[in-house]
Each structure stands twice: as structure tokens, then as C-alpha cells.
Image (cartoon, rainbow, N blue to C red; front, side, top):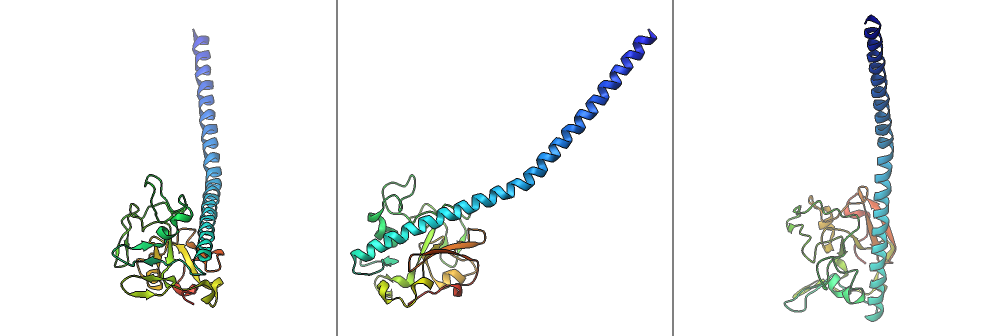
Length: 230
């Protein structure tokens, strides 16, 4: 009887030791997983953000190609940011829509012109106040991923900015044409407003398509980091 009790105690002790060691091993494995995750996840996020920025660059280059088609068709004139010859207003996505329906459309919105969406736009700013104007509403055609410099033509009953030809630009490689934006148009005042239209959505920076059609990124800064008119 004594031997049985002793053997039972040894078995319990052995099992308890195994359990303790198993728990320690499990905790070590969990700790290693957390360490690896802390090292790996930031790298994955950075890689994902880089991929989204590259996709955005590609989309802006597509817009640049379409702008060049428009210029060829209209005697060198750059498409206007907004044109309102009558009661209806036509913004640049509507003007460029016939050249590429899919680029200027949004999923689930049917066959009509929309401001293209940036691949890096997470739409987490829905309802954000923009300047003194309005709130972001992604269901509206004039909100999306990109804004056009209104110095390239913005007119209706009065001509705020006359249309210009690409050949009239003094330094197109420094002149902003399109950039990451919440609104379809962008101005110096919109950029510098405390509630800016400018969308610095790529690692605290944004992508810009310049008037010579090249695309590059800029870190967050004032409107003076780019050229705005001819």
C-alpha cells in the first residue's frame, strides 16, 4: 500500500513537472511569435503602403496619358478643371470620361463619370470638414482620390481662370496638374487651409502629376513646394 502511494506520488510529481515544462515551452513559443510578429508586421505594412503608393502613381500616369490625348484633340489646350457654359457644370472627370470609361467610374455607381479613387484612400475621413466648404461625401461624383489645379481653367458665368495650352507653361516639370486630394479641384488656399483638401495619404506625403506628365511624391509641406501657374 505504501509503495502504491509512493508510486502514485511520483507519477503526479512527474506529470506536474511535465505540465510546468510544457507551459513554459508554450509561453516561450508564444513570446517568440510575438517577437517575430513585432518585427514582421511593420515591414508588411510598409510594403503594403509602398505598393498602394505605386498603384496611385500608375493611376496618375494613366490620367496624364489621357490628358495628352485631349490636348492632341483640342489644339494643345489642357482640359479645364471645371467648365460651366450653362446651368450644368462639367468637371474634369466628366470631360475625360469618354477617353477611358473605367478609369473615371466607381464600382456600383453605374456608367457615369466620377473622380477616380486613389488606391491608398481608406475612406476613413468620411464626414471630415474641408475648409469652409462641405463635408467629404464619397457618394458624390466630385469627391475621390485626386484634384486638379484650377489654374488650368475654371470658368462658368465668369472666367476665374482662363483655359491655357500646354505650350504656354513656363516650367511644366515643376507645375502641379493633379495630386492626391479629397476634392476634384485643388488650389493654394485649399492646400494650406487648416482643414486641407490635400490628401497626404502616402506615408505623410502625396503623389503629384506635373504638367509634363511625370509623377513624383512630395512630403507634407506648404503649397509653395510646387508651382501653381504658368
